[in-house]
Amino acid sequence: MRPDEITRWATVASQGGAALTDIAQRIATGAGDRAEQFLAQVADQAPVVAHIGDHVRQLGNTPVAADVANGLALMKTEGFKGRAPSIGRAHELAVGVHKKALSGLPSDESALIVATNAAYEIRAQRKGLTEFDADDWQRTFLELLGERRDTDGTVYGGITNSRARGWWGGSSPVVVPPNVKQDAFRDVVQAIRVEDFGDAPPRFGDGRPVATKDLRGAALLQAGDGRYWINIGSDASPVLLRNSVDRASPFVLDLKALEPKLKERVPDAYLGGKPMVRQP
Image (cartoon, rainbow, N blue to C red; front, top):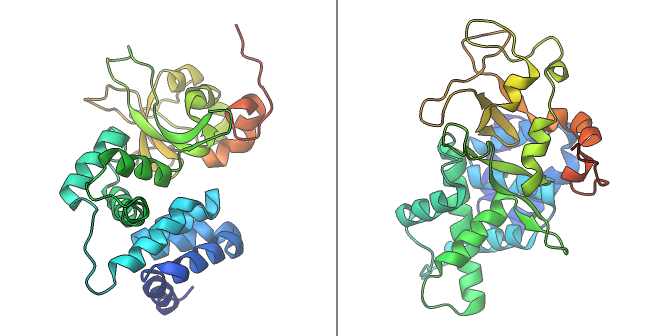
């Protein structure tokens, strides 16, 4: 789309309400393979709009997306008095949820905080809250991260540790894709093989190729939506695997790109997948 069209869409959607939900739905259903590219362009001008557009694209018109849209509209009304926390307090609450998984993505974290505050305004009004409810705010933040619970109690998305405790004494929290079981995320990562990357696998800093066992002993750092940097160092002193083409750049693990292969290997780790047979 042309820059002026992006600006017009972003401006209209930023008003919240039906305009935001309508544009988010259009992106989800009409942009197809170009949706991520389009949302990246929108994010430069309206990061909250881009986040909700991506949320709807992946999860549909969820109640929390509707609450964000209505909250943004409510916050623009004359005489509005907010119930949500300050940005500083909200940041503290957000870190308490994501455990610093979003520390390398400050723009994404800021957009999530603004969206959570907007949704919280509607939920607090609906419940008639007069005192701030930090637990409710944090649950809303998790919903906007993509966490959801199935009817049998299975949790998808949200936050988990990419490396089991005991490795270097760290946990390396990351955001789980919304279609992956939270407690099976490490099964997905462990199923990755070096050959999955074709002729552009990750490499050590000195250019040596990595082996599958190197991937399985590594931690992940959040690099984007379903994208991760691979850390073979400690949490305190990360050492990132490098890109084969440009070793000055860290390699980015794109779980979405590998999803067809990984679904075959660990189908039960994914939403709607058939049970997998775990090896003894």
